[in-house]
Length: 96
Picture 1 (spheres, one colour):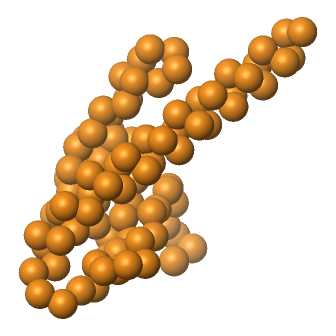
Picture 2 (picture 1 turned 60 degrees about the horizontal axis):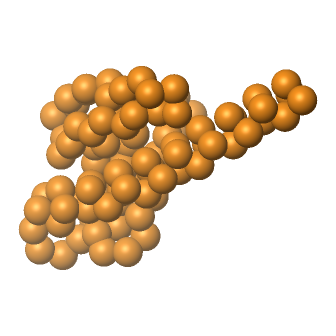
């Protein structure tokens, strides 16, 4: 990745080989994207956009990556839940 890029990316190495950008907020960049909502451990909703930064495949790439976004979101949401859990656990440890 270029040094001027920031944020989180999901790299998918199976067909379609893809790099998916994960941006907080509802962002539209002229690429294939989907908006999602995550309720964090504090109960606050967070808006996220997953967009295809790069994709390579045989056939209809756009259809394949559009379907892939939901799978990528499930993985990213599970990661955020894991992070929230660890942050909450660390905060509880500090209070004891």
